[in-house]
Amino acid sequence: MVIKRPRGTLDFLPEETEKLQRIEKEIRDLCLYYNYGEIRTPTFEHTELFVRGVGETTDIVEKEMYTFTDRGNRSVTLRPEGTAPVVRAFVENKLYSNMQPTKLFYIGPMYRYDRPQAGRYRQFHQFGVEVLGADDAAVDVEVISLAVKLFERLGLKNLSLYINSVGCLDCRPAYKEELKNYLKENLQSFCATCRERSKQNPLRVFDCKNSECKKAISQAPRVISYLCNKCLNHFNEVCEMLELLEIKYLVDEMLVRGLDYYTSTTFEILAENLGAQSAICGGGRYDKLVEECGGPDTPGIGFAVGIERLLYVLSSNYEHLESSPQQKFFIVNVGEEAKKEAAKLVNKLRDNNLSADMDHMNRSVKAQFKFANRINSSHVIILGEDELASGSVTIKDMKTGREDKVEINNIINYCNNIYT
Ligand code: AMP
Image 1 (cartoon, protein in one colour):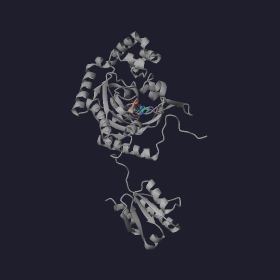
Image 2 (tube, rainbow, N blue to C red):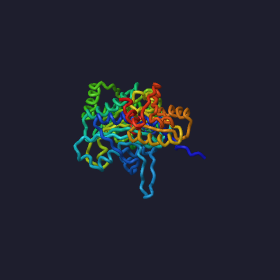
Image 3 (spheres, rainbow, N blue to C red):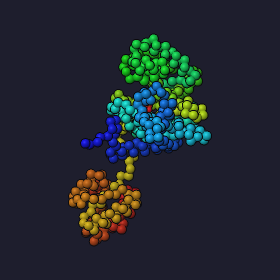
Image 4 (tube, rainbow, N blue to C red):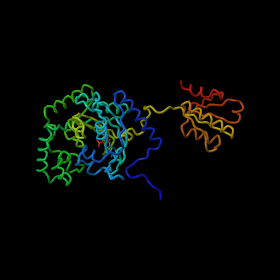
């Protein structure tokens, strides 16, 4: 029986991986311009981190985590998101003792046991940034602008940025009470999970995908009307600065995001042509998470972008993104002696940082040319007995058809200088 990949996972074959790498290059360049350093945390963590960080009564923790007991009887979880691990690393490595802020980014796989559908997978990849140690509204705007800039550079169109504020520990409790009252009065309109959550964690009712619940919650009091002065000023400052940078946004008063750690600013970027799973980026402030994870009182903000969804919205529009070097040499070789020479030459080309390959299937010359075409070779070097005897080869530019005679001793030089 053929073994298939697990449900909700993807194989990235070389052509797709190349696209991924182009996206990743844009991300890494942009993060360099914004002065963010890359962090790589483990793909699994102690389960407790997510239970505490993301929140016990969130969808992720209640329904979606890949949690198992390892051979040492510890409960570990494949990371469902990147913020809690970065915060854990910030605390564990005492990054708070450096001059702040700490600006980090990551790219890597995440795991959620959700019902797979187009744009929703059980293993997916996220690019995320986190800024720790600064609560200035300008940082919120920097983070948002980084996401917007990335999408611009990738050439994405028809995106909408939605923002909101979910308040802080000073103003949210009063709002929660109001919301609880509303839910209590309208309990019959909500599903069993929402009814349960209305007591423990009423904000999570906003995350419910049930259409009846969605309808009922749309009439509920909005957190933005309950913000304290500090949160309201912060929110207004964010809006002003977005306008200053000419970043278009809409306020979505229902945007609370599905994780408990958010405080103050929340935001999401939606792509029009993504259908049901239209969010390509989501983020917000988490000013209490560092403390929650055992560190000193430190504000934080970040976002995560779904890479598979980026791939989808980009579809085939990759031409403008930088790719790996275009020159690719293929050595067509005929005869035993020529084959040995070709093996040496291929080695030498690679030693000189040039992409090179040769025939390994004893194909005819015609079939070797066909294969060279198939793997998108830019140039073919023809090496047969005649060439060995004369000490020079023909190098053919596969695009223009131009052929040059080049001395064997001068091949590397010629190939190095082709496009300079
Ligand atoms: P979240 O961590 O839920 O705020 O998600 C941030 C971004 O990650 C979303 O906007 C999506 O683009 C992406 N994402 C989240 N869950 C999935 C999933 N199951 N499959 C693919 N992409 C996802």
